Image (cartoon, rainbow, N blue to C red):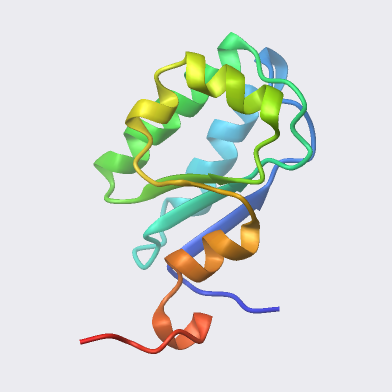
Length: 122
């Protein structure tokens, strides 16, 4: 398994709704608070079947706060119905990162060239 200090990969193992949205916010902030190397946070959403308005607002707030810290927020493996909900919100329009089809694609795109195996280009 490859890791990279500039990429924080987090797998979400359940739908996002009002009861766990604050936990997600707190967890992300706790993980990034003292990590000056971190440049990208990727939320793997393969287990997210639903997302409510509270969770959408939490993701928008996380995106804004990470942007203020110079960190991008990306999503991966978003299911169709969840993507439809994201499209109806302002999150996709203002997302600082990208939405990737797979976690592997996200890691390859965001990690340092020496870690992802991609040769550095001049």
